[in-house]
Every structure is written in structure tokens, then in C-alpha cells.
Amino acid sequence: MCQLLGMNCNVPTDICFSFEGFCARGGKTDEHRDGWGIAFFEDLGCRIFLDDNPSIESPVAQLVKQYPIKSKNVIAHIRKATHGKIGLENCHPFQRELWGNYWVFAHNGNLDNFEPTLTGLYQPVGTTDSEKAFCFLLESLRQHFPDGKPTLEQLYPILQNVTDSLSKYGIFNYLLSNGEYLFAHCSTKLHYIIRQAPFAPAHLIDEDVTVDFRALTTNDDRVAIIATLPLTDNEIWTPIKEGELLVFQDGKLLL
Image 1 (cartoon, rainbow, N blue to C red):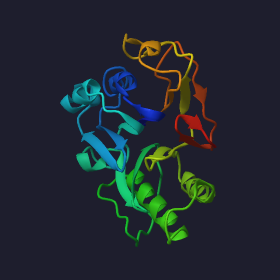
Image 2 (cartoon, rainbow, N blue to C red):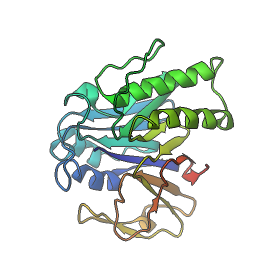
Image 3 (cartoon, rainbow, N blue to C red):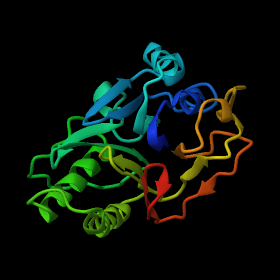
């Protein structure tokens, strides 16, 4: 299956270090060779890079690794195709508008026999179960809150209910963000770490690269990293429990 990477912080931060290790899993240290993508929220805008080539061979991925784009919310995905052909239209993350904000979604897993009737604003462009699920999820949220953006306290239980209904079709690990919050749902496998003072060096599992965060941060910085599997071998990562839907904001775990 695919792999996910997310970042949520209290100050705009680049993801170059984490993406270096994650990118290696797209054909070098793992078998996810069927495309990749990454989305960076920047204020109300969202910058997305997609490529249907393996990330380890992609010139676009090389650009992203060397381009320190600073963002408070990032979602990345490397694909091992199960539903849908290898093609740009099937690369995650997917993006749509809801309540005047961009929403970005990436999925790891399989939803078998999932054929929803989508009659609203959201229609899939590609042929993946993931994009269908994203369209269904957003359409459900819009129907529940037709008058505009709800509070997190209003949104969370509805998102949990829709997530539970989709999880009945199979494996539904996902990352979802509107640039304010980052939602992480674990169906089978997802981990996170929150880096904050006192910072320390970190070493990647997939590449022999070490970064000393003490030289790059202030005592007020806080960064949450979410990944399918831990990216470093000298830090303690927390596994998310199966069925849990977590919410991160400003590098903190809210729910």
C-alpha cells in the first residue's frame, strides 16, 4: 500500500529533512513506485507538486528536497497502485474547495466495492477509491453544514462518523487538512512525533542524514510530524491507535 507524511507546526517550517527520508521510500528503500505528491499550505493558498514517476527518480522531487518551502501544514504521499492506473490524475494528495478554503487529502489503504452516488459539487477526476472517498467526505460535510464553516467542536463528530462509515469498506488511513488543522485517521498503521524544546539531533532511517534541530529552531517552535512508519531511528514515535482520528493545530495534539 501507499505511505503518508504530514507536518503541522506553529510557525512556517520546511519539511526538507523528513521529505528526504520519505522520498527514498518511493523506489529506493521501499516499493512505492507509482507516483507521489506533496501539498504546502501558504496562508489561503496551496502549492501542490505531483508526479506519476517514482519519487526517487523524479526531478520534481529533487526540486522539492532542495527548495525550503515554509508551511504550517504539509501533506505528502507516495503511491503503490491498487485502484486506478498509474497516472497523474490518480496521484495524491487531492485538493478541493469547501467553505472558502482549500482542503487537501491523501489516503493509504483500499476501500473495496466502494461505489458512492455523488450528486453534489464533488466528482472524482481519476479512478481511485481514494478520490471517491474524498469527494464523498466533503459532500457529506457540506450537507451537514450548508450555511458555512463549523467550529472544530461541531465538525469533529461529523467527520468521525463519516470516517467510520468509510472505514467499513476497508483500510482507511488518511491525512486531511484545510490549512488550519491537520486531521490524521489511523485504520491500521500511522505514527507521529512532536518536536519541541529541548531539541536534539535526528537521524533518518532511509538515508544516512542527520540534522541537529538545536541549530535550526527557537525554544518556541513546535513541529508535529505524522508518517505511516517512523522516519528516524533515534527518536520516540507514538503509534496512533486503530480507529483514532487525531487533530493537530500549531504543532499540538488537540484531540
